[in-house]
Length: 142
Image 1: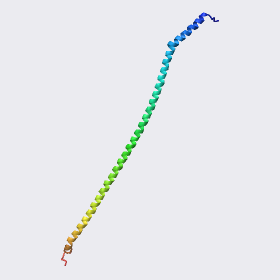
Image 2: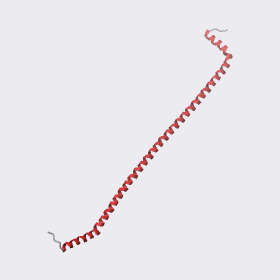
Image 3: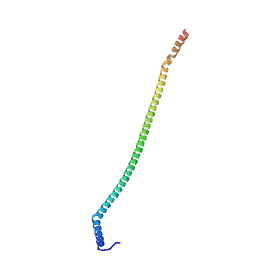
Image 4: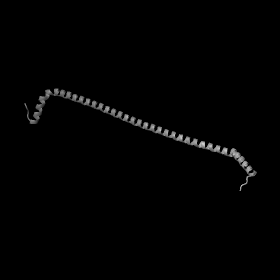
């Protein structure tokens, strides 16, 4: 059986003194270092999470700007194509009008020229008809 004597009391005191010294010199500094490490880990995780969120926001913003730029480019392209088509149609229409005007002018000029030639050849018409008839008939027509 266990005997309680003064050595037991000395060992209890010795144990308590040792616990006090170890607590001061070893446990508290180690626990402090472990707590600081945990704080750094948690801070690093929060910083990593924040950086991930920032990257996601930046990427989202980048995609929106890229999409807007593509939409603007397509819109500008369509506007340019429409303007080119309108200009081409305007040039074609102007050329048609000019050609129609030239054709009409040439027709009028030809009509005037035919009228002038008719007037010039009218006095000679009788003699030309007689000459043609004489050649066809082979004899002189009166």
